[in-house]
Length: 178
Figure (tube, rainbow, N blue to C red):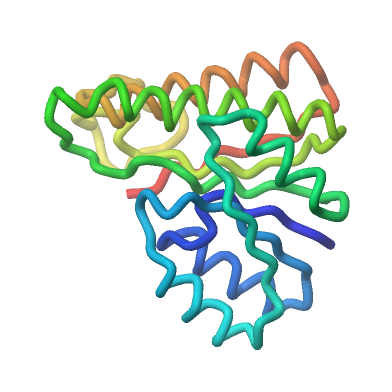
């Protein structure tokens, strides 16, 4: 199988890439280094014997995503781990969090649809719950994000639900990390 990992040089993306590589899958990484570094890519390549494909892609730019898809063999699925991940940003970061985490997700889905790739795992966040009413949390707990990051993740999840309702061929799972 061939997987695309957005945010592939970040923490979640890089660990996922290593695991998929170890299981014999082909992996392509998209990243713009806004939350990672070239050094992390080099370390990843070293760990995976230079078998990972990397394409510099900015999800805020839909043409950048199209270019990345056009340079690749068909993807069987996408693990969408790209986001601005500061759970308690200053109010000045609200627009950039929305642009990256919500608009970037919409752009990615638009291009996935164009290329007929309908399988996605979305790296969401437990911050969509806000202050939990009970513990442990589960998917039925009330969603009440208390930060711009949590709210943006909730909006992105809503976008993914909307798409899966409009087009039943979509297979999407959201993992809410702590």
